[in-house]
Amino acid sequence: MAATILWGDDQVPVLQRDWKRHAQRLPYRKTYRLKHGERWHDARIRLTAPPFPPQTPRQQLTRFEGFRDKPPNNPMKSKTPTINVSRFSLQLTPALVAAVAVAAFWAMPGTARGQIFETNGGNNTIGEYNATTGATVNASLVSAGLNGPAGIAVSGGNLFVANENTGTIGEYNATTGATVNSALISGLDQPQGIAVSGGNLFVANEGDGTIGEYNATTGTTVNSALISGLGFPFGIAVSGGNLFVVSGNTIGEYNATTGATVNSALISGLNNPWGIAVSGGDLFVTNTFGYTIGEYTTSGATVNSALISGLNYPTGIAVSGGNLFVVCNGTIGEYNATTGATVNASLVSGLNVPDYIAVVTPTPTPTPSHLGNISTRGLVQTGSNVMIGGFVISGTQPKKVIIHAGGPSLAQFGLAALSDPNLQLYDSSGAVIAKNDNWQTTEIFGIITSDQVSDIQNSGHTPSQAADSAIIVTLAPGAYTAIVSGVNGATGIGIVEVFDLDTGSRLVNISTRGLVQTGANVLIGGFVISGTQPEKVIIHAGGPSLAQFGLAALSDPNLQLYDSSGAVIAKNDNWQTTEIFGIITSDQVSDIQNSGHTPSQAADSAIIATLAPGAYTAIVSGVNGVTGIGIVEVFDLQ
Image (tube, rainbow, N blue to C red):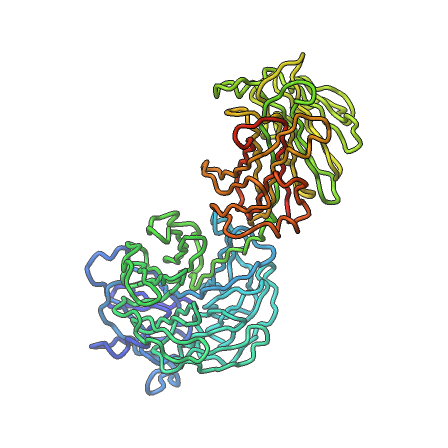
């Protein structure tokens, strides 16, 4: 149904949108003769645009005069009907124009990192593309029942699409494209941009200059003329309880609840704006006839009126993940929303007259945080002064871990390192269930039934020294003890570590016993909180209670907690006296008593802290330089 308009011997392009508001500007007119059987709407088909960029400062633009169905004097009644065509000068001649519906999106099932949904006016489809790679997911996700698809929004796993030619809003499943309700809302007047907020849809009606509000679930009318008297509204976005509407060469701001005008010319002097997107406190607007994307604050201040320039007729726009996605003459380009730098000018190409665009990024499901790995460094001697690391696996499923005993690699730090560590793993009954001397030689013993060298190499935690010991085990929930000693009675500073290798059950605490001396020979416990959420833990430094077992116990332990930058963020001497320091801002005695891990001795030290994911170090030393066997423990309180 392609229409051809000739101006002399030259082909003149036709725009799909915005012909009404310019029709009266023209100094003279040209007559276009409809072909047999061709309707007025058919004549709106886009034609080939002139070369870009324009070869002259001003290009000639032809648009239909402002009567959608029948021009003056009703020439459609004649056997060979005619239509008045208007000619005037503008800065550029686009072959397409589009605006944007900014989509609110809540955890859409079945969608990857981010998806692009775009309406194709050329073939009445909705296409879906990967927002990271631009790869086609489904070029015709929705194809049935569309008629002049324009604005698009996404909410609750469904797409809402404005059908300009039928005056309807259709609802479709965003994963399968299946029709939910092809006429959820009807009786609209040339609906264009759509925005969704608080369970309601806001629709820009180009034909009657209104913004209507409708229930997104039932389609029932809330207010069909929430805002009225607008000049051909197109793009619409919602933020902070207000609507931002493209109307004429301005952006107006209105209360989304009452429709009251906040500022009808919040931003003015734009060059034929079409699409609008909002992110944080910024608005991004396409200036179709200025080849630019402008950035403004939601209060109307200009951040950069040409954040991105030299574009090929920018129309639809959306923002996601810190980047802008822009429709430009059959393509979708991606640009950095802060700098305007090009990420990929043709992320998606070969589209069939794309109009509106929505880009959605699923809300990531928060990952419950947990103790992801635990390690302790201390002085390893003989007899009762070996280093003993305990850990507990909670949950109902077995957990795969790697346990590592090191020493030789510490020599590079000038420490008197344990030259040849030996590792033994005990279960809660006190039975040895696995052991190893050098990790490159697997000991087939207990629960170790096959060679582990390859598995250790592929674990991501390969020991750096051949003399280190390591075992990989899958353990049922319960308590376990790893004992590190020196081969043939060797002594020195060593380390014991437990790394979590899978999901499911959790490492919920580590408890390491070792000889606490001074200087580099203090007891150092390290742990990592994995996940995306803060984790509440209690850290305990003990010693006095070990005397009952006949050990030369540390009589008065002191505890300091460090973050990954090496800064002390919390400390304690005696747990019954809270030290207000760093992240500790209130008395903790009651919380410690109610934690389920109350120290048995007044001289013990303890801290309760809610920590962001990351690496932390707890150092146990003796007050006033005292020495003895001590213990450092970290318990997961969540």
